[in-house]
Image 1 (cartoon, rainbow, N blue to C red):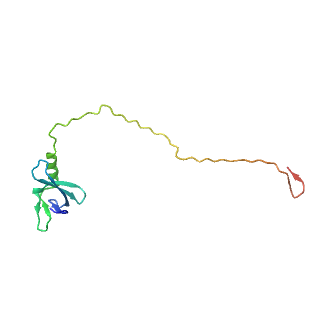
Image 2 (cartoon, rainbow, N blue to C red):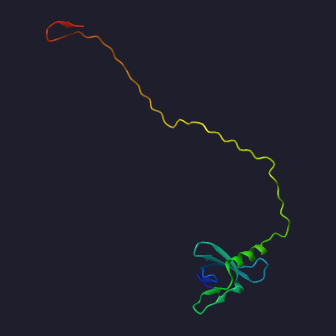
Image 3 (spheres, one colour):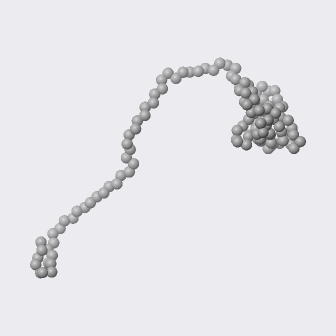
Length: 123
C-alpha cells in the first residue's frame, strides 16, 4: 500500500493508512489507520478490501476492532496489584501579600520674619 491511502469503514468513517506493522503473533500484518478526528485504529491487513479507486474498505466496525484488540492484548500472566496503605494530603490556605507601596512624608520647619503690607513685622 502506498501512503497516504484512504480507508473507509463500515460505519462511514474515513481515515488514512499511517503504517503497516507486523501482527503481534507473527501471523500477517496490521494496518495503523488515523481517522479524521485524530483517533488511531489497528486493523488486520487481510480484512481490508481493495476498491477500484485505489482506496480500501474495512467491513468491520470500530467497536469490533476495539474488542478484538482488547482480547489480543489480554495479559498472559496475572497482574500484580499493590494496595496503597496510607495516603495523606494536607491543604492549607493563607493570605499572601501580593504588592506593597511605601509612602513617605518629610516635614521641614523653619521660622521666617515677613513684613505684611502694613509694615508691621509678623511672627
